[in-house]
Every structure is written in structure tokens, then in C-alpha cells.
Image (cartoon, rainbow, N blue to C red; front, side):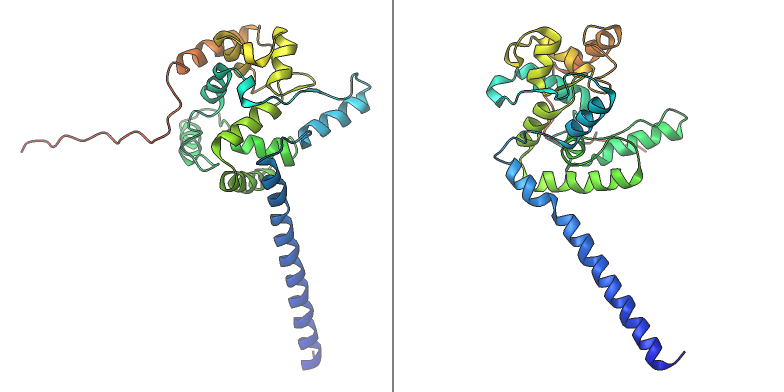
Length: 247
């Protein structure tokens, strides 16, 4: 191969790598303006909602569009906020979008022979609901983690929690706390009782399969109600002091 051809090939590789780098940077920057907008505007629709609309259209289900009504923080039962944290992410105020402690706990359970359970934070779930698709893959989890970090960087914790409560899937064709309260208990989200809030939080892992009045929700709600007695921690607990042995 002549020197001219080698130089031309090297130039071609540099151009290709530069284009790939620019493409990656553009893709990484795409969520930022939307997240900044969501700091003050509630998104009317999410990626997950649109996926459900497509599925219902293909299956011929009616209504096609999901039940979803955005409400302010003042119109959400405080019991529901605490119940959701107790059920889904009690370390919400302690992590930065990715809970390293819970990930380590999940891996340790797996090493001991237990089932590997997810350790997704509320922030990661908001990232998935807003921008991504359902399913399990390392690619999706990687993108989800990146967007979760952006959410934590650009929004307050309370705003992220507001987004979650108004966007989470809470049953077949029902999104957000207001729709959940109306569909399951025929009341507004503001008037949910402590027990009803715990039952709604109990079905979040599988809202299309579990009912808040079913046996699974009853069992899970009992545990959630116990955790709701205490505020979600906002500081890490102090490490236990080891007593020195006297020689």
C-alpha cells in the first residue's frame, strides 16, 4: 500500500470517528432542553403512554387514549407520597439518581443464591417513563442511568417525585395518581386514605396485573404501612461505633 493510500485511509477513519463522536454528543444533549422544560411544565404524554396507545390500537382495545389527569402537589394525598417512597425508593433523598447501596444489596442477595431483583430508583423510573421503552437490556439501563443523572442535576427531588406521581402507570390504561384514585377507588387523589395510598403503592411493580384490592396488594400494603410510620430519611444514618476490647 502506498503512502498516499495509507494517508487517505487514515483521514477517512478520523472523519468517521469525528462524525460518530458528534452524533453521540448530540444524542446525549437531546434530553436536556426537555428536562429543563419539565422543571416548570408537566409533560402531557410520555414514551410509555405512547407505547400503550400503539398496543391498544393494534389490539383493537378501547378507549385508545389512557386516563390521565395532571394535578398539583396540593391535590395529592400526603399519604400517597410517603407510601410510594416506602414501596419503591425509601432512599430517594439519599441517592443521586442511582442507588449504589441498593445495587450492592441486590448483588449480594444474588451471590447468596437469591433472585436478582431490580434496584431502579424513582428517578430512573421517571427517566424510563418519559423517554425510553419497556423491556430489559443493558443498553436501555445504561441510557436510563444517564438520563436519571441529568434529572437529578437539573431538577429538585420534589419535582422528580411530582413527575413520578403524575406519570406512573397505575393500572390498565391509567396513568398518574389522579387516574389511579378515580379508577380504583372512585375518588380524587387528594382524599386517599392511608390504607388506600398503601394499596396503590403496593401495585406499582405490576400495575396491569395486580389490583389494589387483591391479595398481593393486601400483603404488600401491610409492609408499606409499617414503613410509612417513619419519614423517608434525608441523611445517612451514622455508622455504629465499635467498642474497643480491653486487653
